[in-house]
Image 1 (cartoon, rainbow, N blue to C red):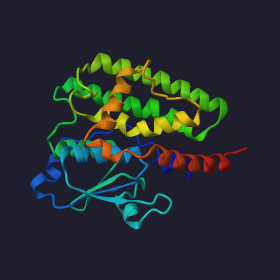
Image 2 (cartoon, rainbow, N blue to C red):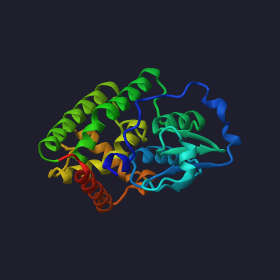
Image 3 (cartoon, rainbow, N blue to C red):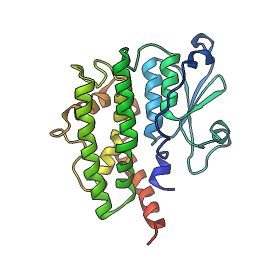
Image 4 (cartoon, rainbow, N blue to C red):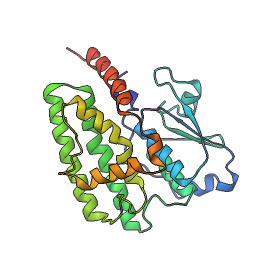
Length: 257
């Protein structure tokens, strides 16, 4: 299994639930909430953090991606991937789809801006992150030499674009992109920050998210890592690094010569 599949391969592009989300389940009627995930998957972290920030009680079900459970295959027969959120037996897949459901289902605290324009901008930059920035993260983890260095350069360029876009479209005086409290973009960038640090080590750099070049994102990641709710899910660097190194070796060994 390659780095891509082990971290849960890049999900399909941004989707959002229709306004019918509220009709699926009323909060007062929800009896059981389960999150099927994987300890090293940032996609799962996004959902986990959203539930925690909303104060939703849920059961975490750890999946073995080398030997996927029958329950996972039944719950997500289309993609066979985590995360999968199950509420009263009804499954939802894809992290951003699940996030939209959570935001509709449990209103407080809001993780998206109330203003429609700003809300749309958050979704735009989330889409940019997944479509433009993440592919370079996978290349850094799976490739060597010139391709790896090229990906690192592109990653930094995309981070600068993201930084400038957030400063222009979503100005904030708080410690987070979302203001005083974490929001969707904080969840996404913060959840992937551990992988950024691992990739930096793999490409031989001190860091990829440089304080001098992207001070806003660097600061928001630090705030996210220290937040009383989100800090509990931070995976130790060495553990994640060893995991990714092992997967990288397998990917390189199986790559065409």
